[in-house]
Amino acid sequence: MSERFDFTGDELAPAYRAAVDAIEAGDLVVLPTDTVYGIAADAFKADAVQRLLDAKGRGRDMPPPVLISVVESLDALATDVPEAGRKLCQEFWPGPLTVICHAQSSLMWDLGETQGTVALRVPDHDNTRELLSRTGPLAVSSANKSGQPAALDVYGAEEQLQDTVAVYLDGGAVSGGEPSTIVDITGDTPHVVRLGAVSLAQLRAVVPEITTDDDEKPEDEPVDDEKATEGPVEASNAADDEKPTEPDVRPAD
Image 1 (cartoon, rainbow, N blue to C red):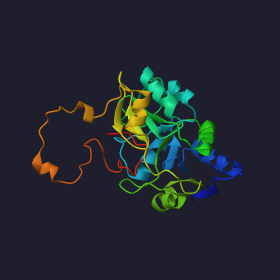
Image 2: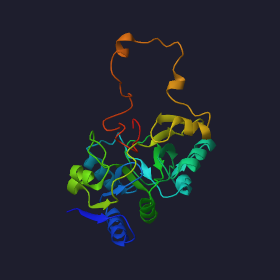
Image 3: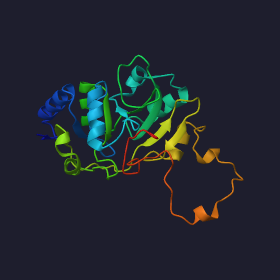
Image 4: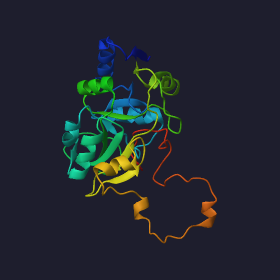
C-alpha cells in the first residue's frame, strides 16, 4: 500500500523519514524536481533499480540517470571529466542539465546497460536536494509509464504507477515541464545529445566549442524530397518515452 506525504511548507520531517526508510528498504519513491515528477530508487541497490525499470515498463537498455545533491559529488561518481564539462556543471547545476560521464569503475552499482557511463544531474528543487543529501545518489526517471506523458503533479504519477511506488511526495504542481538538456562529456569536446530547458546559446556562452549533431552534417548533404514531405522524425537513438515529455533520460539511452 502506497503512502502520500505533503512535501511543501515547514513540516517535512514525516516526508523525509518515510522517503528515506523506503529508499533504504529498496522501495520506490516519487518526488518532485524542477522539470517533472520523478520515480526514484537507491542507485546502489540493483534490485531497486530493476524495480524502477519494471514499474515504468522499461528495459535494461534504457538505464536511468542519477540525481545528486551537490556539484561536488561529480568526481565521486564520474571520472575523466574534461574541463569544459566541469564548467557546464558548475554553471547550470542545480538545474535542468544532465551530463553523461565515464562512471567510476570502483562503484558497486548496476543501473543497466550503461557501457561504463552514467548520466548525472543536480535538480533545482530545495526539498529534493535535501532528501538526496540524506539518501545519497538516487536513480531517477520520469514518473510515468513508458510511452505516457510525464507527471506534472503527484496525482498524475499515482494514476500511472499506483502501488508499484511505496511513497509519494506531494510537492504541488511542478513549474517546469520541459525536459533537461543532455550533454555527453565523455569526450574531449562536449556534445549535445538532446536540447531541453537549457538552450544551445546558453551552453555556448559557457563552452563555445560544444557540438551538436547538426554541426557534423556535411554542408552539401543532399535532401531527400520524399522525406522532406513527411512530418518530424524522432531521432534514431530515442526510444519509447524519451520524448520531450520524458525528462532526465539516458539517450539511446
